[in-house]
Image (cartoon, rainbow, N blue to C red; front, side, top):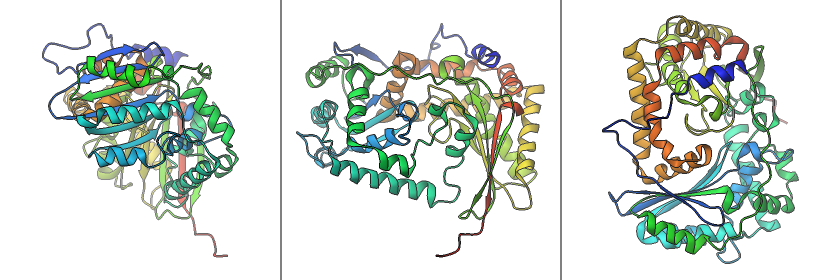
Length: 451
């Protein structure tokens, strides 16, 4: 609780969301009678639009004993409906010059479309159609189980390091099942998923009141509000299950896990510190500190581990890495360091170098020139992403889900600028401490003998 209170102090006041001359994303919001929230950002710079239909359900909310279920269900959403069979979505959108996709995160699942504005009505009809009903069959479920299992093989089981820097590190650092379990899912859990589970998941979470429709581009708010009512307004809302408790306090003792990896050619270490939920702490200070430590060849850990002591070949990581960016989470999260180190070194040596940098920051803070450079880069990256209508729509939908107000996207640059050296000093001294640290050391191992 002490750390939660300290982090709350790091969140700058939002009394003024922007300063004169700032670029501001236009935002208009309306809630339909059935609960669907619609967000519009008007931008006539190109005759295109980006759409994000985001549901407040992700890895944290999937059923216990069904690891990977939210991700599996994301795949099911592309299997067609009773009215628009499988392949219709692809044919209409891609045939009209657009693109589509979807992805699952701990706190949400989103479905994204980008197309010329001439395809707007068709895309809205298709998204509304699959919110109404899916073609949920045993055949489709079996097919998508196999697809997800193959994805797990490619990205986890048959890849060096196998994403241990977020899957295994989270399992070590967190205590609550919602935060700690493998969001990709075990083969056993995927196999045990039944059609009734899929039907129940859809009925529980894929409802208008649990969703945000965000559209950015060559559109007007009045146009989108009218079309949203036309295509989505008749879909009845359903009660959503209560959200489980996900908050966790800091760890009180360092946690360690040693692993062997027959596919790895060099050892690697992942280090993570638990940070509280978005509401408890706010991401701005942690995002800036992650930038100081890890963002690019001028970052402190790259200079210390790769250029300075030459004990590692990389220093990657960040806040909420690699699942998203600093603004992409709601519940508890990790600030992660991932480093492939030389066989002549050790995980302990890497951890010691990281600890030395954190102690230096905790004692001295950050020089103003370095702080300004990191904040400018963070703000530039944000604007670069928001310039694209599709990713602007994604950001607006997330902000509406997490903050209850899509316009808080416009507050992010101000919050970044408000971060001070003292904020970072306090964060390093109270949160990124050894007792709140989890470490996974993955060593190469001889491949298993052929059978």
